[in-house]
Structure formats: structure tokens, C-alpha cells
Length: 319
Image (tube, rainbow, N blue to C red; front, side, top):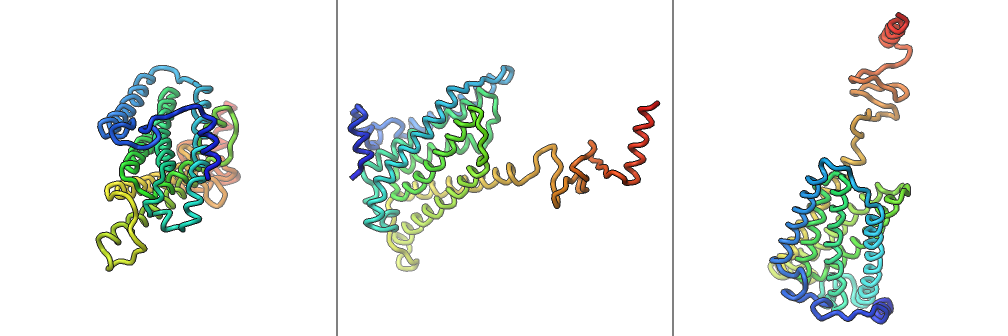
């Protein structure tokens, strides 16, 4: 029983051919290396060309288009997540955790269709970077790498038919519901206090993802190459190349997002004095009331050297 999926199938008057309802290599769009790699190269060429084109031009606002793009991705992620949960929950409840993570039975026709939609979402998300370029925002390495690598990651997992991929996809959709809503709301002028927590959620997402994919990869290798030397609950469905690639990409995400979090939220902002014991610090010396003097010199009221300095400035103004 899948009430939501059945309702959508009845309501949306679209009849899709087989190669758009299931993943057929060579027929489904963006299902071969000859399509995927040129598409991702084109993405990089377009965004960096746009950045060069906009260099001496004023930034474009594009507020309405930007909001429309983000609300489509937020709502679309939420709807896809609901459909996936509807399909996964009964299988998980009936068969248990290990079966749900590793059995070939977790690759249902509906889940394959949902994975395909999620894969195409990744190409839609590449437009994020186009907006950044047109608005003359920085094109950070993390952003460009994450967007292009995630499209490639989804492609490899569809090819490899990894049974565990519903875990990272579901968590990623959950994060994207909030993340794209945040972009939509702030573009309209809303003040959102939980921006920092989005990065925390993404880091938590990758930790859970890595536990799942490393467990699945370990189970596969332990069962197929090292049994009975290593303990295992059984093998895990999917190809070796897809499993290894997934582990590598998700590991790189975790490292890069932790680095981003530290640089953004833990290091003092450029041009601001660091804080120690609740008091501002300039060059390692506390500055009372958070006030400081340029060139790295701090001034504490009623201290001898500062009084001399202030009096000399006062006399100079009188003269």
C-alpha cells in the first residue's frame, strides 16, 4: 500500500515511458559516461565563464527566480522524501535493519523511480551555482565540488544498484527541505536564526551516511572475500566500484564540511578582535569595553601610557 504514490499517479496526468520510470542504461537520459561527464564539464565551464563575464558588471538580483528555484527544490525534496518513506517503512518494519540495508529486495521498482528523480534533482541543483555567478557571490570550492560530485555519486549508485543508498538519499532530502526553504525565505528578507544548524545537520548527515555505507561495504567484502575470518551478518547488494566510490566521496564531504564549519563559525571574523574571557582581544591583549585602536594597539582608560597618548591628541586639537 502506497496511498501517496497512488494518489499522485492518479492525479498527475502524465504517462512516462519505461526508460523514464526505471533506470535503463543507454536509454534513460544521463545514464552513460558519454552523457554524464560532458554535462558536468559543461556545468563547470558555464559557471566559471559566467563569473568572468560578470566581473566588470553589476550583480543581478533575480530575487523572484531565485525564490522560485528554491521553493521548488524544497517542496520537491519534501514530496520525494514522503514517497520514499512510504515505500521503505513497511519493508523495514517487516524484515529488519540488516535486510533493509543490504538485501536486493530493497531495490523495488518504485524506489528505483524515486532514486532516478533524486538523480535528476542533482542537475537542477546545479542552477544554484549559476545564481551565485550572476549575483557575483563567491564560488567556493566546497560548493562547486559538492554539487558536481553529488550528481556523479548518484549516477554511480544507480549503476551499481547499492541497496543501502536509501539512507543517504533520505537524510539528504530531509536536509534539503530545510536548506532550500532557508534560501527561499532569506531571499525574501526573512531573518532565520538557525543557519548555523544547517551546517551541523549536514555534518551529522555525513556521519550517519558513512556509518551506513562503510557497514555495507565491510559486509560485502567480509562475506565475499574474508569469510569466515571476519565476522559478518551477510553480504550487501551492490557493485564494488559503487561502494568504494560512495565511501570516498562521502568521506571527502565530511572533511570539507567540518573544515567549513570551523572556518565559518569557530574562527574570529576577519577584522574583528578575538574574544577571551568575554573581553575583546587585540594581538593577544585584552581591550576594555571591546574598543581598540588601529595598528594593533589597545587602549585601557586610566592607564598611564594611554592617558599620555590621549592628552597629547587633545593638546594637538587645541593648537
